[in-house]
Image (cartoon, rainbow, N blue to C red; front, side, top):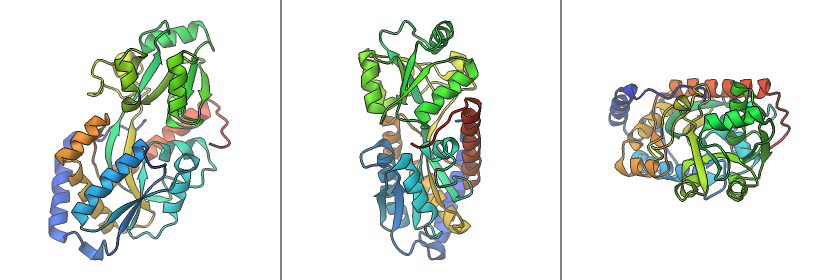
Length: 330
């Protein structure tokens, strides 16, 4: 969210370095990997995060010449899976697929049971993409600025649905409210699907969701697309403005996908996996799959991921504090 997008101009340099590392050390440099690698996906099978985990697992298995399995550990908005990986042996054979809840959950709930910064070693990001602000077709507003104007003129009139308290869908609303001084009523649901149903029926007026989840309703006119949450437009919805064009440059959110390892994982192992990730995101079939899911390839060093995660956690904590959110559990 609050972290700047990893600079693409660094991509070629980092990729070249990664390829050199792989060719020089081989797939089993320093004895790693010497057994199957497990990627813990902290959500149920079938979700978008699960699909990303399985895609990366398949490709890493090809490059590292070892079995890479996905282990779904759903619960507590991703906290259970994160807790498990934080306690695992720091040898690179257990990894966590980190997405937006990895940073939003502990930022909103101090008792989440894990620390995304102190408890993990960043490995690398591999994809990111925005959410999309959507509205009921009957709402008398067609842009995000018109929604804000309506909310200012009639405080509390608008209802906004999210996938749950403290998640990215909730906190992006709170960020907008913080920066615009508006009052929009938040209604948490158990998942984005029921919130979408109620927006389609007009029971609530607003929500955000991933582009693949909401694009069918946008294309057939049952929902209005107001803006995407990234600074600029998304290739997946090129007709929809980004936050800067919409007049809210300070409210930008990226849903990201990355790998992190338990704290203390050796740097040589981290660099080896990072180099493999850099290769994965150049594969034509991976690029095609990411584009289908309205995601863009992203790469960078472990240090860059560490900076991104720190800024993301800090930014969400500020939103929670300034909005005086009281969140006891998810």
